[in-house]
Length: 186
Length: 117
Length: 206
Image (cartoon, rainbow over all chains, first blue to last red; front, side, top):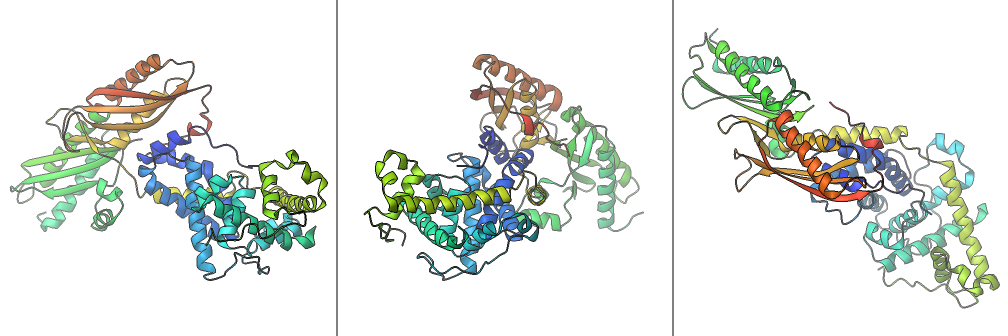
């Protein structure tokens, strides 16, 4: 299910070096994981410069916190967590009070995907991305981590910082909402 | 020649930097540690113009304390480079202050290698 | 709020909850339960989920972000510009004799020692800490201890590897730096089949 290549075996080694101030090791990690984290941020925020900013800030935060990184999680999982938290905070700031835990009416797309990419996409794909805007921030994060990044429910719980049970609920609600939103495209 | 003390400090700094740069095995001079550190201390130091070469007058008249931070080149033994830099800087400071009201008598040079490039 | 959510409020006419049906799809257990094949309600519910999965597949196929896409490169550049303003040089270590006033920062010495270890075939270096031997402040002048973690290919045995790395580090300390290293601790973290060194060998010098 995962579309990501397995994190390279020497991530832990490079993270240890980066934590000790080896900026070249850190650059290797940034180059290695930047694309997939940008994909994650784009799915969560709707693409554009917001996603780039979120990933940039997440890496800078990682550089500052690496000396305390003990490697209980892999570097990739750790970065997923930092990026997801940043995106969630941004989404929550965008929609301060929307109670979307229940199935809601489809919301208007918040951010269109870039025109260049739209041209290559089928209309259904555009509709799917627009429908994501109708999910609550946590629903969106859980569903994207599951479907686009192939994370297990356990890993999603760790990444989003909620219980396993809560992840199940969020993903179920997201699927309920999205299957309905995509009804017309089947 | 005998300008204000601040001018002499600047000239001594320039002379020390030029001397250090001319030593074989020096890749480049590099901002001081405090300039590399983040946070308030680092910013304050940068704001005060902390560069790769720090110049301070010692307690006794005619005494100078020079700090140089630099990157050495791979293929040159770092210790040997620092020795050459220390004597080159000491000589340069002596020459620069020779015609000053108070020529340098005691020059301390501290060299820190911040990278081997 | 999460725990109070009614997770099984949506029940299919056959009595199964929609959430359970969909989660067994996630777990890949639908094939083991004959009910799913025979129940029209469950089949329809699974078809819905598969259709959504198809849209996800289309989306992946339509918008692949190849590694090194322009925006990823731009982010890397911006991140590293900031990182290079926030370096962590580590402690200052004494160079030369006790009465000399020359130093090297830990990060620079560590870089040299890691490179020395990696000059051996099939060896990668990780953590490298250097500290004054015996108690003392970060600026005390005296001999130092090096602790270096390495990973290597299975062609190495641990003792041979430790000896070889120790020898390279000692030589680098003597010939490349001029640092008085009196103790070298090598920690062999892992021995692996093959070492992929493709994208760490392009370390640039600045």
